[in-house]
Image 1 (cartoon, helix red, strand yellow):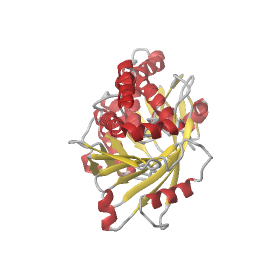
Image 2 (spheres, one colour):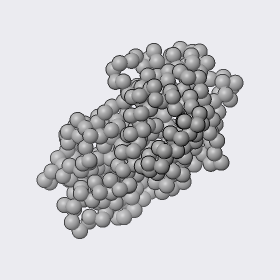
Image 3 (cartoon, helix red, strand yellow):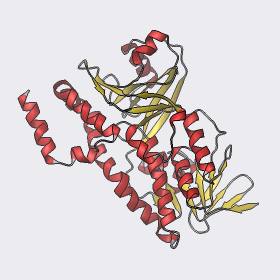
Image 4 (cartoon, helix red, strand yellow):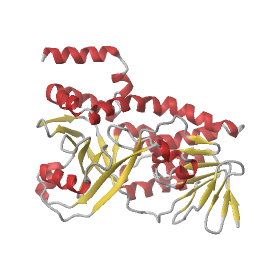
Length: 381
């Protein structure tokens, strides 16, 4: 049994639904496949930073659990914390089962086909590209990999060798009213307690999403770190269900197109290496993959090169500067502590500017004058 589409997308998360939406809008016959039955729970902090709004082509307010206009950034080792308030949301909180279901429905409304609860057995992304299911082959012109860092598209292409997977652990915690009020409307990031990483508290509609992550892969017990973090923020409970997951970052390649296969989102490793937020970059990369296919309709052999060029212009350039700052924050704790202690308020304001999209990592980190001002401020202390 066989069928055919112009494009088959594997994975119905933010990257897959974004690509499917834009392709269908352009009249490209597109099928999205996902191994899970939708809607499904997805381990994720569920914070959509405001700068990502410009990549989302529709109103998603109906699935927003809470808007946080205040960010709290702290270094618990130097006992410094800084509140940054904005007139607009810094982060919008969602539950991924609701957001992903909403996004896939938008793709379907645009004309995209979607099949869930489907296992992809193999893919051929070279000559005569096709996707193999249990009893069916689906032939296509292009395949988009949106199935995460450990999906079939990264395994078959070998792209997984270029990724670093950051372990994280999260809980969805119901708390009493007084505790919820303490964290309500604030997106919180705590450095220092978790070595080479951070802890977070994201308030949802009626509960808290709390988690920890560490760049020191395999060095620390995340279960113990999570309990330690809960104690540090005065939440004393062991009655919760943990969800472990890994966030792929820092791809060691500039190529994300393998013949007729384009990798997007976590399959490519596009999470922000500082915040580890990946929803926005997934949505953007899905759109760029769609754009590359649409603009190459007359000569599909150029699709991969066009996709890599779009990524370089719209995403990779920014991630390069984010990698530099990530190295300072997570691999040089002495520098991070010094900066938090001496000019933490300024740095947190600047970081919030990037999260809201008012500034970019490039704007702050590419100009020598900014480093001169930084040194001048430190000397004046």
